[in-house]
Length: 328
Image (cartoon, rainbow, N blue to C red):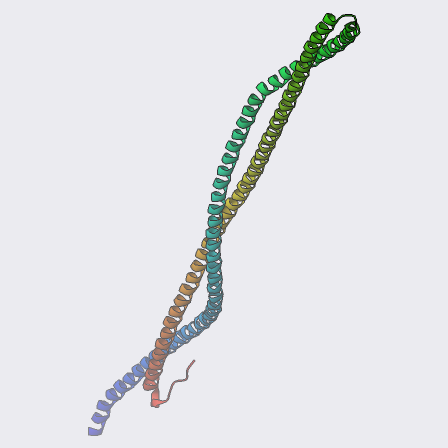
């Protein structure tokens, strides 16, 4: 009877233990299922993280290559800066040359002005000489007229002398006829000789005046020729100065065009340098961002690995008999 009662008492305990065991196995199975799912999710996350890490590593390599390209861009920026410096130097040189040419243009203008004033002065001198020459020419014409008149008078005096000589000869012939007639004839002859001498002296004086007038005319003609030559030389100098001025103005225009071209090159160089600096900065920023993303992703991978290790430890602790659960 006692044995029967003990068996009846142990039967509910056995059923309870069996029920607890069943519940435990069910709980273990549920936990195992959850652990498997979590393990699968973690594996999937690790795979995705590894793929992302590989992609970021490739991006990092590309960015490192881009960093090399950034170094090239830096070199191009340095070359552009050098070209910009050369353009600035060329512009300064062109400006200096322009200032020098402007100075030469001003000097040429002064020289042209001086040549014009000198030519005007030579023209005024020529006009003065011509004005001075006119009375001398009038005087020469008058002297030539007087010379012609004196030549006529000389011819008349010679004719009169010849007539008087004929009369003297007649008087000498008649002298033999009478002494008084001879004295009268000699007196008349002396008078005629005096008149002839006076006519010859007047002709010589007229000839001397004519020669002096011709000499004065020749001097005035020489002075006029010299003044004309000086005016022509001044005109030539003026033409040469104007040609030099035109040449200098052309050089000034060329220097201004060169300065404008140098300024345009400088602006283009500055724009290219700014673009290269912007590209270099963008490449550097992208490299830094990629490095930051790679660091964050590596940290996430490490965290996922630690989480997976914790789950595996939990699985091993929850597995029956302490055996490690196989990983999926």
